[in-house]
Length: 263
Image (cartoon, rainbow, N blue to C red; front, side, top):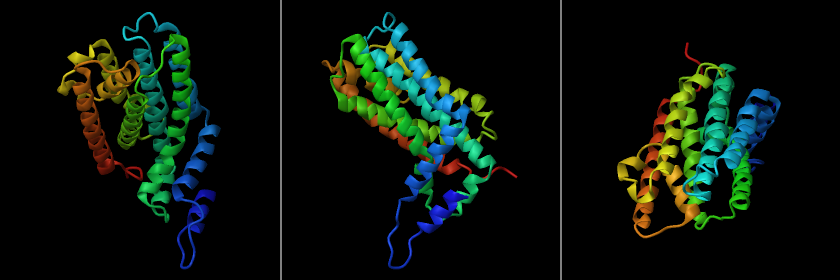
């Protein structure tokens, strides 16, 4: 396979330097495969951006928190469909074809392989999120008051959804089965985001933030609408809990992920 030969050629040799990082080689190859696969392309691009635009058009009357609620919900749709579901389907397909097994025996490290498989989905979702949030700002005539907090929420969401994608792929034998195996994670994450948007910031407790999705929605809304009074203390709790929860998900995913099919 062309990717494997490129990885081999990029392996470090005496007196030479690696031409391209393995992660970027894998990422480029994976992006080409995604573009050629209509199912993954639909899941990673058409569905998330479609739901995001639908919520932008219909959610303005339901969003109590204004632009912050709309932005948080859009980010949730894009992360769940674009990263979580798309990555789970792709990993199941790559394992089924023994592609992951061949990658694991290549000169590329596990970190480079994981990064390379994840880069295309992160790139697509990042572009979609920027577009969706710009349209949200124009439509609602608002803008994020703390762009750094919104960015932090997005990064936490990307890492969490990617780790959940790897973890869920462990129990997903085929790409078609991903529609079933991702359902629990999808419901928990989206339920957490919806709960955070239905609850006033000052009413968010520490144990609420431990629920996957709550910290993402809560931080996104606060970053967009701004901080007031007691919200600052809740913000720091949200930052801390989200980091701990994300690290825990990554650790579990790294522990149980399988590189080859069960015998």
